Length: 475
Image (tube, rainbow, N blue to C red; front, side):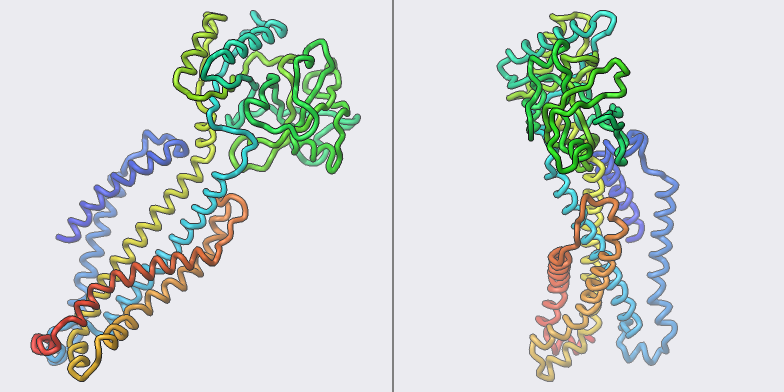
C-alpha cells in the first residue's frame, strides 16, 4: 500500500517537475512544447518501485528465517541485529555522500552563475528597446537612406520618454555575425590567428546611447559623411590584436570585403569591448564604420534609451508609418531580454542542480530520521538498563549520537571528496575559474549536520525522557 501511494505521489511530483523544467528551460530545451511524460518510462519506474518495496519488505522476514526460534524469543521479537544496523548505516552513508556531492556541485554552479550575471558587458542593457527596420534598396539609395534614418532619430528624440536614439546593423547579443578581413600597413589581417573582425555600421550617437566608453580618440560626428575622409573606430580587442602595446591611431585600415574601390579608412578612436554573441564570452575584434559613409546598410536595428517602456513601441511604429506607410517595424524587444536569453542555459543548469541538491538533502534527512528512530527503538532496552544502572541522560545522548553520527560524518567526508572529483567533470559548465572554496563544503557540512541533528533530536529526546522501569517491563 505504501509503495502504491508513493508511486502515485511520484506521478504527481513528476508532472510538477516537468512543468517547472519547461518554465525554466523554455529558452534552451529544443521543441519544449513537445516535451511530455513518457508513460512507458513511468510504468517502468512504478514497477521498479514495487519490486524494490517487495525486496526490502521481505528482507527482514528472510533474516528472521535464518535465526532460530530460541534466539528470536530471547530478543523479545526484536529484529535488529548487527547486520541490519550495518546495512542501515551504509544506506545513510550513501545518502549523505550523494547529498554532499550534489549540494557542493549546486553551490559551484550558483557561484559560477553569480559571477556570470555580474560580468561587465561593455554597455548598459537596461532601459534599451530594440527594433529592426529594413529599407528597400530600390527605393532608398545610400544618400536617401542616411536622410531617412537621421529624420527618424530626430523624431524619436522628440518623444518625452526617449533619452536617445541610434542604430546599428547588428545589435549585441542577437547571435548574428558579419566578419570581414582587413588590411593594415600593407599586411592582410588576420595574421595572428583571429578568424576575422566583426563589422558594425553605427549612427553617430550609438556609443552614447548604449553607454560604450570611448577609450582613446573620438566618436563619429556629422563631418564623417560620404564627402569626408573615410574613418573607422576599433574596439580594444582589435587594437590589441593589430597593435599590441602601441597607440597607432591615425594609421590607414583597408576593408578588403568592400572591394578594390574601397579607400583606406583612418582610425580615429578605440572603444571598450562589448559582449558579442553571449554574456561572458572572450572579447572578439570589432570595428565600427559610420552609417553616413558607404556602404550604408539598408537593414538596421534601432536602439532607443527610454525612461519608461510603456508606449515606446506604438510611438515608433506610428512615426515610421508617417514617414513611409509601407515600412514595418519588426522584432521589437528589450535588450535586457536578449541578455537574459544569452544566460538561459547556465541559469537552467543552476536551477536544475539546486533542485537536485535540495531533493537529495530532503531524502537524506528522511533516511537519517528513519534510521535514527529505528536505532533508538532497537536500543530502548539497553537505554533502560543503562539508566537503571546510573547512566545520566548526557551519557545516553552521547551514546546514541556516536552511533548515529559516524555514517553521517563519513558520508560528508566522502561526499566532499567526490565533489572535488566531480568539479573536473562539470568544468565546461562553469564560467571562468571557479574554485571549490573551503567555505563551500564547510557551509554544506554545517547545513547537513544541522539537519541531521534536527532529524535525530526527536527519537533521542523520546529515548532519554522514557521511564526506564516501564521500558524494561515492556521489552
